[in-house]
Length: 64
Image 1 (cartoon, rainbow, N blue to C red):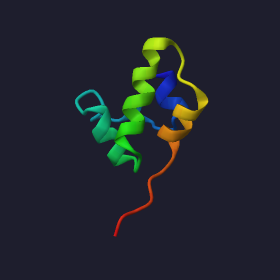
Image 2: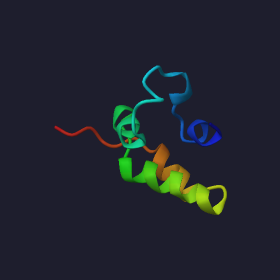
Image 3: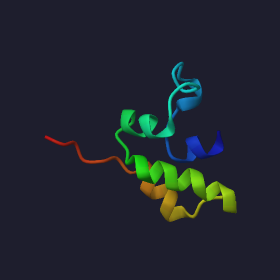
Image 4: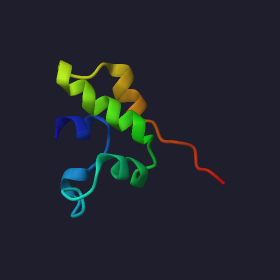
């Protein structure tokens, strides 16, 4: 919950959140799915470093 807030997504209040993978949540929020995974995996070692949080928080440029 704290991590999702730190990366700026309100997934806790979304009806689809319990059923959707974190990579889909990243795409829905215009973020890099790999960055979302890396920041979540970093929780195994404690709180993720600021650079991982920043990468997960960054919006991807729109394609097209």
